[in-house]
Image 1: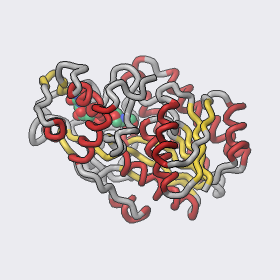
Image 2: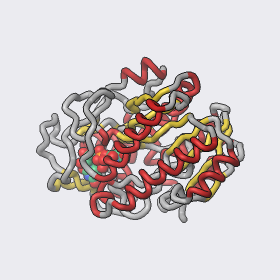
Image 3: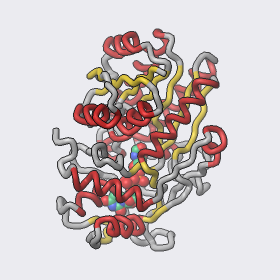
Image 4: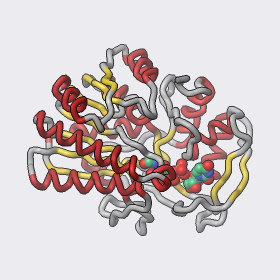
Length: 337
Ligand code: WQD
């Protein structure tokens, strides 16, 4: 199929674009390169041996979005583009509403006008707020605990209304838990602009000596080793989840949400130990106070995606950290631009 991937130069987008190409799809990328690099597109072409046309545009530019839809006439759209920092969104929420919600509205309007009504939306486990049921099922009550999470929740609700009003829409909502790792070639990976906030990129920067130690936010949680527990999932498993969901939206109508996680939680200390194993020496760390807004534990109930999409994550923690470490070691400056 012809697929338009917004945010296709980003961390999750680039790994999904490569996996779509390897599955035989044709892909065009639309990206504003605000938090990504055109080098990632070149590397996808290098790894796949396929051309990846790329339109440099921002979803806030509704004319450019319409042009992209008209030019590609996609059979489906995979929508990654958006801002994703919980902390930044709390300090400066308006760009998140304009960028994430406004951008999604422009995209949906252009899709409606172009008659393209198949969409995969990049959502997040953050829409579960502080879940009461662990492992977290998709029918867990949804709530937002920060503006970023609220934009994801608002877009999910808009998509639900759209599909309920017009049964020509087929929409897959994919709720990511904690995506980590990198392509095993070491040529694609996470290249956070500025100071990363997620655990693994920070651990990698300590491992290459860019930072002195990892600050572990809290050691007094009600968990076996006192540190937070999360469902870390390899970015390539997440990419394969999109390919599986694509098959669903091609054959079904309506809007449906699935968790993309492994169904298994690892603590911060377990991650550090696994990463130290991959590096071959201990990663220095210090316990500091809890980070506001953090929840003690979260990991996915993955039975719905397994049953309905025939998809299950395959990579374990050792591969996740080994693949991330290779990327970090071979690309200490990320994509370099
Ligand atoms: C993981 C664990 C921290 C950094 C976030 C977003 C979520 C999604 C994924 C977009 C926690 C601990 C972290 C550090 C630490 N992003 N930690 N020291 O918070 O689970 O989820 O990223 O969709 O929306 O909320 O991920 O990597 O920030 O934290 O101890 O320097 O690592 O306390 O237990 P999180 P994270």
